[in-house]
Length: 269
Image (cartoon, rainbow, N blue to C red):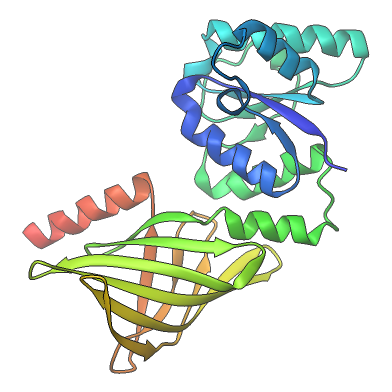
């Protein structure tokens, strides 16, 4: 059975921590996260101490933001004291960005989350340490599928996409693409099947329908296959209305913004 972990971090690293917490939860790990556990009126210090002592591990997210944080230092001291008393490894360093690592952590192996391309490997190592068995294929599939939910940018197109896939119903996924043209907002609801093979996830298109002003205006059979890449993008081939295969790429976060800016500069040039 997977063990539990308390995620110690600075608030400026919250976006990464939320993603990691969600991924760990999908894999079956019990995660203690302050925003989920501390309620209005609770004693902050006592709740944090309760969370640390009640968790099997403390994962400290290391970055320039956290190494100087008084709260993170306090949480580390609590966990290290417990580690010494129990004679069991308690603190797991999670390196998010290059920083001056505290001296008492330098002899510990860390999970390297500094680059998006290494996220899957670092997550796998952390999950193994927390007792997520490789034979728990369903939990692994849940993580692989669930981590790709959310907002995406279609590179080269002024179109936003939202991917909605459920680990429990991978055959009923949707990609919702929205764009405006001539003052009219068009929504494309793309039906997809999610397929997991080894550590790769494929999105296989079956058909899509157009909606304008909230009303369906047509349904089309469609054929496309895209794969979720290690660099955090979705890439593949999609057939256009003429049946011609064209390459497509979806990105999100900073990568999407940088690509959009670069595409805009090329068009202006």
